[in-house]
Length: 291
Ligand code: GLY
Image (tube, rainbow, N blue to C red; front, side):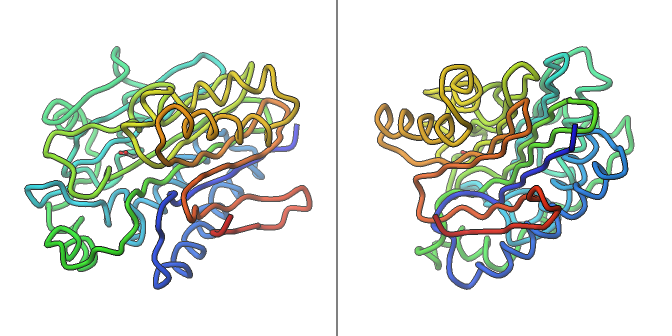
């Protein structure tokens, strides 16, 4: 089976000044993940490296560049899921770990639990020597200005994610976020909740979602989209229908990317923009931000 990979850099009101950085960031992330898959690496390794690139890029709402909570510091969520054994690793409300996606993967591999949060997650990360950063390292001038409410026109949501299918037929999906702007301290979004921000099942598909986390939770968007591949005639129909259901039941906004177990790629969103990139059947990078 030929491998497949798709990434997103978040759905929302991406401001014009950030368009180029979003596109180049998504392209850089997809190149790294594709190189791993092309050389026979696993889907989990590919999504980890792609998402680390997006977390380190300050234009995205994940890792460095995460939105600040009401008290002025970042609290990040991330999750990975493997489609072969339905194994999960998730982390919620971490503030000091440079790459929450790598912590989520360590939880998948090394913890008897599916999700760790806050101080416990930090303690677990420290036992594995994962890289820590000072709280200020995560803050950019842009996110600080949003926090001070000096910028109002900014994107409402953020989040990054990646789905990959490897040579061995295994799907992995991952999502990482700083959450929504002006969120209350302690708020946990959809991203680390299984089936909401992320889902992967080799019998259906893998999905990473972005957008209004409170609404995404209500329809369990990623699992909904995976299950729709069983009844809809294409990935395009399954992704579109899941966003239609989210819109009709919650009147809110979200986006998602998907790869099904036959290697078909898709995305859908009802926000003004969503940055995303993938590798087409000719091995070329495609990257878009507009509908
Ligand atoms: N979808 C990201 C969040 O609401 O936290």
